[in-house]
Image (cartoon, rainbow, N blue to C red; front, side, top):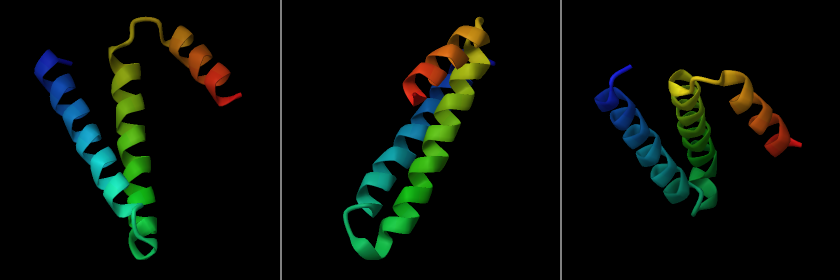
Length: 67
C-alpha cells in the first residue's frame, strides 16, 4: 500500500469522524452519526493493521484497550 493511499484512507476516516460528531449533536441524526463513526473507526483500524509489520502486537494492544 503506497503512502498516498494510506494518507487518503486516513483522510477519509477523519472526515467520517467529523461527520459522526456533527450527526451526534442532534437526537434525530444520532443513528446516522453513530454509523458514520463506526465506519470511520473500522477504516482506520483496517488501514493501521494493513501497514503494521507486527500485527500480533497491534492485536494485543487492541485487546488491552478493549479490556
